[in-house]
Length: 263
Image 1 (cartoon, helix red, strand yellow):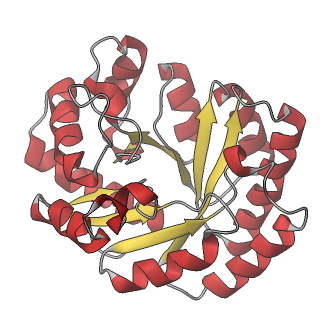
Image 2 (tube, rainbow, N blue to C red):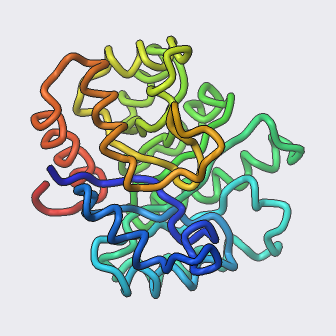
Image 3 (tube, rainbow, N blue to C red):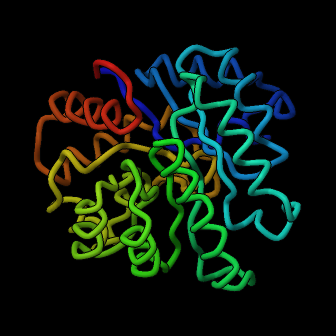
């Protein structure tokens, strides 16, 4: 089986040689269990120039460009112009597949007004460059849905989805896939597990959010794309379907989302 990790912060220090393992070795570990593609979200203007180079070094790596709300206060005031320029250059790069990671987070000290202004700027850029979006949403699904209705985009994914069936359906109605990750491996996540089980399989894509969002049984450890098959197994069990057939469908979903030919 071949799998795609639709959301992995593979450029973070957890995957560098600082820990004694070269990034290439981490990627080989993931490939050994069938992970043949992963998408690295952009989070910070300082990081953007490095992504094309990193993805060019390892076959199967792709990237997105965006300003994550966690990095909003640190960004220079001209970040919208920087992002527009970066996207203008990257639009011809087949390795750049989305605008993201963008979104809202109710737990931040950054005002919701400031977060929403940044979100709108980036939704407009996604419209301009006809790219899907990778969305971050912490306790803000309904607010995010409001802005997506006002500024519709060419598809996308709300990563690490954790919400109700009603919210899941609302995202899917707007062409926004649901990123399925470690949350579903926790029995206590009843609301999210029920929503994921009830949604059309065409709405789902796999992710790890590595090195964050550890799976059940791996708490306290850095997450890793090589654990993606465990997310697949949990999803197959949750939906009571054949794992191999599910993997084929999920590959078709993510290929459609990011504009890849085939599955």
